[in-house]
Length: 297
Ligand code: DO4
Ligand code: MG
Image (cartoon, rainbow, N blue to C red; front, side, top):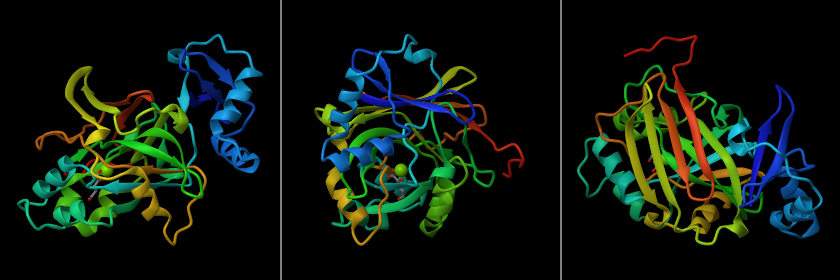
């Protein structure tokens, strides 16, 4: 069972349940966070509430591919874990010109405490088909395809989604203290297209993640990974996020990337990024240089 949000106009969106046989049921809730809060209040799971709602509703006639979707959840904050896959550690060592061995990246990959950073806020986060922006002061930028955990304020994982942690490799590579600038800018994070409810994911450590990048309709990059390659456990990442912290219902925690394009690849205006994860869908975003500023090389 998945949750989607259908765009219906500038202001009104329709939350819906998407069943495994592809039927779409409108839900009488204004947001996924409202479902989370009601589930908490009634001491039920989001799944059981959604199942009840589906039983009382009639399916839409429309097909999923004909619908315009928007953010399935509006997270106040998006956090991200870093260097949770070997590929990420090695790519970071390489972009910062250090050899594998004793770098900060090597240390954090092996450390008990994971790397967690604030990735985005709602106003910097976009949904399916919205443009992600590339920075105008960076010449080496990539998408980071990541599994996202949708969290309650207590740190329960209520669902899984897809996230794109857009990143600037030259800025981070120059100095890791520039991390916030290498990670956070307008439209530097996308989330969607659905939330798969936790109880409906049989094996969260065996999800295929793939990424495709198209330039002028031609495939210029493709990469694959599986969540079985993750060094850490989801609960372990969440336990550090909620520690001495305030976490809001609907917070998304991205779990790190395992797909890194070759070093001569950088995103360009007009590219289209597709990230697919088993059972969640395809998160597609065009890449744009923000219009009001020109590229600085
Ligand atoms: O250490 C910097 C960020 C790492 C990251 O975003 C990732 O591994 O996905
Ligand atoms: Mg990342």
